[in-house]
Length: 98
Image (cartoon, rainbow, N blue to C red; front, top):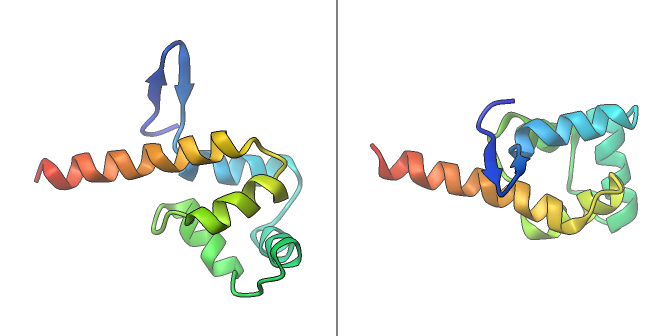
């Protein structure tokens, strides 16, 4: 996994690695996950394309969708928040180093 960060004795992979891994381990396609998110949230503005952007690191799911992702994938919300924070932090570092 790329961009892992140590957190004490626990390695925290970025959400771009974990989201597809968690989705696939549950036998879901990107379309399936988008449908679950739409059904759970009552908001049909999420699409397979948006899930793909999250997985490729083009976008980071906002707080609203992180909450629904934790529910749809049966993951602790704190983990999803930590994964997203790791990506935000690494983006800030790379912007500041250029």
